[in-house]
Length: 392
Ligand SMILES: Cc1cc2nc3c(=O)[nH]c(=O)nc-3n(C[C@H](O)[C@H](O)[C@H](O)COP(=O)(O)OP(=O)(O)OC[C@H]3O[C@@H](n4cnc5c(N)ncnc54)[C@H](O)[C@@H]3O)c2cc1C
Image 1 (tube, rainbow, N blue to C red):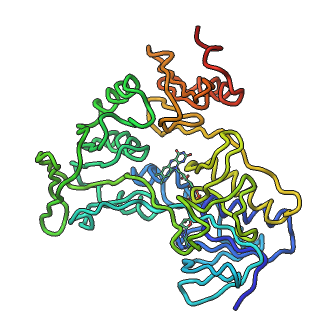
Image 2: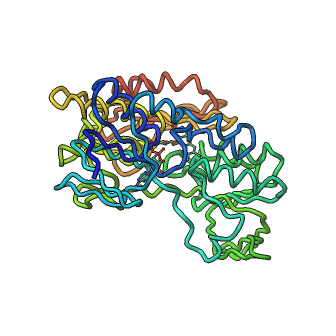
Image 3: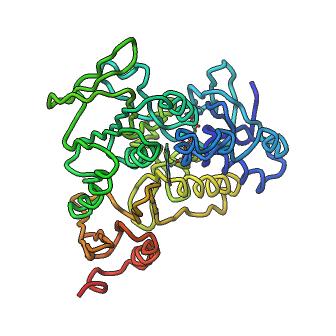
């Protein structure tokens, strides 16, 4: 059994940043960074560029194995299958067992799969890893008709990417309009215009059956009965967090941590998509789901694992912009629900939606058509401005 002071599970941006920070704060510490992908950390946000053959896979790498060696970080390519919090042990799928003093969970999520028969046919792809992107690139090269399912940021980025390659794109989404849970109908109409110029779109639609020909996908039949001939299906229907190996009592949707990114068990930390952290700005528990969040949380968790008596709190107003030629930006709290109301304050060339809480304070917003406006929205959210102060 090997023993390390610090073990990091998940070698994405959160895990790699944590490893680098621990090394900086503790030059002599023993560190193992365990990841189940066969690459060192890479720019996951840019895998679309590999799928579209605009970039080679190696251009996305953010670190080399040599750099890990120089920093004396032991990068182990393996999957962690169990974590024993009492004995402080991590079991790997190669049979190895590692003992730790402190462990960081930075395992992110995996792409949710379709459950329909045919979801494993040739030509059906998820889109979460560099390997997925390479497979998509190779498969779609000589294909013309491609279908996308899912109404999140991956779906809309696929529309942009594949239509620009000259493919005949069809988009299937379950909701009445794109991002219905986050954008008002007026904003939904603007996004619809953008999509219509690039794809044939089915709203309120769900896949019923997937039909094959010679072992590959050939047709999608919607629950409404409509038939879509297709040569490939790209799926972007959300994430399932990688928490199967974790003690269930420490988890809710993700691994529950406080503002210092430490869990109920003070030897276990979390960062990135897997962390369900206490947000001191919103005063509730939430999850990230963005590169900036994972990147910064990795650094803060790494720092706090070393300096347990002087931990720093994490706080960041989340900002997200999908890679589309129509500028779209989400700032702060954006999931509309009973505790949050949306108010559209501009709907011309520039669409501005602010999200307010029960006290009429701006806690988030959406901008379409003007990326520069993101800074203004961020200031409103940061300043906890009353909506009455910006609209008369
Ligand atoms: C196509 C795409 C486009 C995106 N575009 C944007 C964007 O434009 N802007 C933005 O802000 N965000 C974007 N995101 C989201 C962003 O990439 C993520 O929020 C970020 O990568 C999360 O980082 P992470 O380190 O928490 O997790 P991940 O990047 O998911 O890394 C976790 C790593 O842990 C590994 N792992 C999981 N379980 C285990 C285990 N048991 N043992 C060992 N290793 C394990 C995983 O295989 C993975 O390598 C995009 C995501 C995708 C897929």
